[in-house]
Amino acid sequence: MNVNHYTYRVTWSAEDKEHVGLCTEFPSLSWLAPSPEKALSGIRQVVADVVDELTASGEPVPEALAEKKYSGRFMVRIPSSVHRSLATEAAEQGVSINRLVSAKLAV
Image 1 (tube, one colour):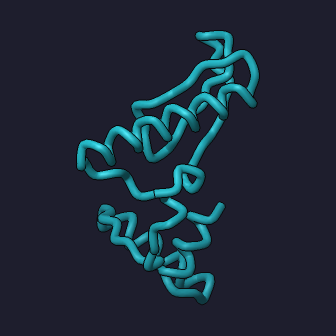
Image 2 (cartoon, helix red, strand yellow):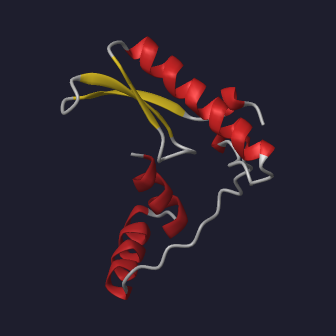
């Protein structure tokens, strides 16, 4: 597993008054630092250490979101009234419900 393929993010923590480095694939991990660069460097090192520990103990290592294959399909259950409303709107626009919902999600 290449730890450089994980999804990293740095944001400001008003509560801690520092930047916090995060990794989407490891939501329980974070790293506080005075600069965004140090927060990113810190979280990357923590993730690398955790991946090493998981690998050494034979535990599963999360797959990087960037390496997962997505089909482009997912199912969502909605109330029938919402379904009816979407069908009406799609018909009025002359498009399929799929195209309408896809466009709404892309916004």
